[in-house]
Amino acid sequence: MRRIVVAAASTVSGLVLVLAYPTSLNRQAAPATALPGSGQSQSATGGAGSGASQSGSTSDGTVTGDAVMTQWGVVQVEVQVSGGKVASARAVQVPDGNPMDQRINSVAVPILEQETVAASSAQIDVVSGATVTSEGYISSLQSALDQAGL
Amino acid sequence: VTAGTAVLDRRAWHQTVMGMPVSVHVRGERVDGDVPAAVASLYAELRSVDAVFSTYRDDSEVSRLARGELRRRDCSPDVREVLTLCDLARRRTGGAFDARRRLPDGGTAVDPSGLVKGWATERAARHLARLPGLDWYVCAGGDVVGHVASDARPAWRVGVEDPADRELLVAVLPLRDGGVATSGTAARGDHVWDPDTGRPVRSRLASVTVAGPSLLWADVLATALFVRGVDAAPAVAADGYEVLLVHRDGSVEHLPPG
Image (cartoon, rainbow over all chains, first blue to last red; front, side, top):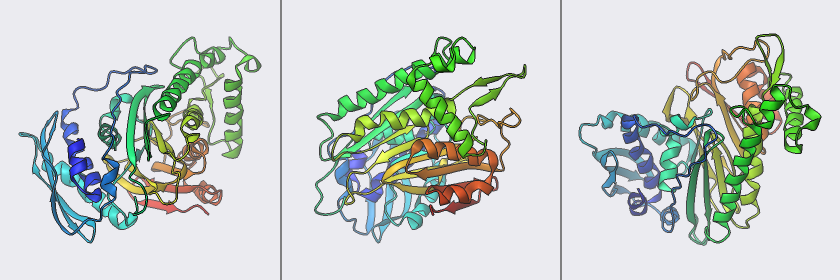
């Protein structure tokens, strides 16, 4: 996950992260087994480099993220950058046999619409939602953010 | 990060505590040093809170209180503090937030769980707050408390989950200092109870998000608005809290803090 973040520019990194996430939705069969009160650690650490991706100004054009191997297969995303913002995004590589395109679009479009609201980058640091159980957690955007250490 | 600011390092942790996922994210020029120990202290504190307040543990103080084995005045200072805050929350919300549960036999039991999460998360976050120059946030089961140490750094960007589709967001709220809490039925089914009926809330709203200086109160106010509906929202906004109402039809209403 880190490679894609480091490789891409800021507006791109957040989006790619979100885009990479839906792959997990199709593989939900292994929910977290934590019981209420158990404290198992699943630390995900980011580190040097990930913060640096916010500093550069993004020039217009097409940016292709690294092909990233996830546990569900290879994900690679290409984004069109215009005026320093992500104008569109598409997956150029998705895991085989995985109906991901639709999912990617269903996530990407609303995120892109946030651009106009937030007038900043597409990056989301954290997700607020109604109380999430451990089981439901893996289907939350937050887990993707944690895993990337972003 | 704007030009002239040093490159910021980032780091994240995740554990399941109190039956919910708790994430800690930090950002700063140095995220090693004292930071890992502070994060460990934060998680340790949440685990000890769970031992005292869990309604899933028969031997917890709150379970004993609910069974009448323990009197309120004999409880630990933490439990008494939370019960006092529950009373305050009930008054402040005109009864919409109520930690008392009606029992089938007509009695009542105290279940402060709805307030404990925000209270404990906010309190445990002090371990991070005392580290100078550190940006941090803690996300506990969808409620967020955070801080940004410098105006030169970007606010944390809090995506608000779409209650109709958890893959989507309905808004992004900037967070520099304080808390963001969401109440709704999206993630867990009916888990908000109407104190008047003792039954799950059938809210006209899909979710309510409240952001403001205190996570504890943002959480209480979000619950109260979800139970009582939109009428109280202007008063909450007037109190300095930002309100985001997501209606059942998917429309989103935003009340800036006034």
